[in-house]
Length: 496
Image 1 (cartoon, helix red, strand yellow):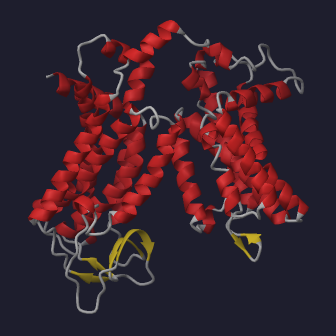
Image 2 (image 1 turned 60 degrees about the vertical axis):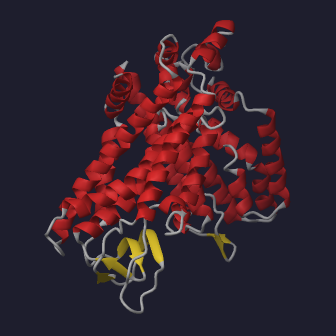
Image 3 (image 1 turned 90 degrees about the vertical axis):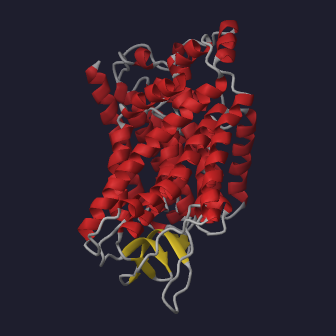
């Protein structure tokens, strides 16, 4: 069957990637977090100050809920490269010449995505069984009670995630970096709103339960610190009433419909092929025309190299982006610092995400391979990211300088060093811009929601001074990120 062969071939290709075993390892760690020791001071599910006894039903439920949260976030970025990879590798051109229908192709990608995420859920289910025995509150394993939450709670959410990954990849506006950023906020809305038992289609699948007298029905889902070990009650298990079952089935059906929706506009790779025949576009070497063609002399060509990397970094930025950057820079002069700096330094995220990924995404990796001083190019790339941060945030820096805000200026400088270093390290390690787009957006969101430990811009303040680890710590992390990029680039250079 064509559909099964398409999905199986795609699944086999994905499990060979280094990211897949890393996600499997993270799934095991996720189980350890979801089912902590009985005297632990953290929990991922708190209901009225209680937790369920570690029976098969409760361990399965809490692990399934945790997997539904984590895999819908990280799993989305893991599986959403299927269509783009076919286009990038030339497989799409072969498919365009075949009689394969669009809805069959999209269904195959959906099944492949579900298989990848489902395999991680299977690992989590096995981890849950082992943890139930290790925690020792109940050594009677009920396979049905253990696995039912994975089928009814986690699986519909993973099918929805897999379907939305196909939808985002097949929709022109969402297939790029903008879709990666929007997913973070969509996930946050779903993760918060889905915890309610009255959420559409049953939300995350968390049902109301009967607690001991005096306990509230307040539910906390997420990694939380608790002062004292939680009280224990007997988890009654999932209520398999028609409303709950119907909601889960409806959610799955909606997910399938969303995956097939792009059949109305998906070009099946033939339109880009026709456009390429009309206009083959620039040579890959044209992207890197700013690089010196000879070995750089000490102190001679680095400024030219830096200027070339800066031009590469901002190449193709539309006029509206520059207008927005200019307005934010002017606003930094007029408005007291704070949340404004966070808005200023989320604006260039799509440009920063190019750092470290340009050789692979532009097709110029083979051209850059014999470049005699790769470390200079890496440092110049980081410098280009710093220049972009400084240009967009110049207004805020000038205001802090005029008002004598030395602590704020130091935090600003640390942020200008750290953000491009993070982008460069992640881009060099993965070769994909979406990793930085996802991680940086999440860090940025947690920071503006008063997470002092992530105050890498100095936005959060106490008595006028930035809180958190401080500028030296973020500068040290920036240096570590650049060192990782240099090491990775040097390793690649020696292997060629």
